[in-house]
Length: 148
Image (cartoon, helix red, strand yellow):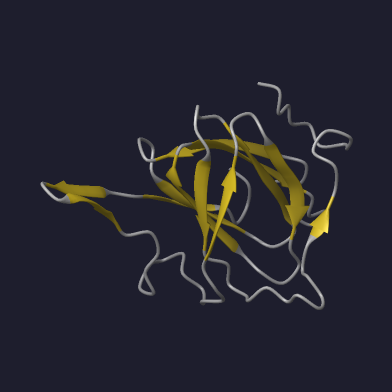
């Protein structure tokens, strides 16, 4: 585990009408504060990586399809500096992954369909001054292989 990463296993509650899944509650241990909720998608085989935030914690959940979430700890003061994590998230393996500030992250669509990810970050997106620091998915020093 990377220091500060929190994973909450989610429970799907089915009935004859469909399914319900609570993702993040204000009384959860990993809840810090609410910034906004947004949805993003990734097509099969596509990688959306790498970036980190200096001001916000991301809280990812995949609600359709399947993703491979990659994390890399670039925090020099962290006991898990230079460590990686590789987490699969889907409706069959439902979880909420809470990613601390200054930890690179990205994901790859590994389903046969477009995957849908819900993020509930702790801060609102600032269009004038985005809190996003990006590097190329493949051309970098991160020891993580997206080709798997």
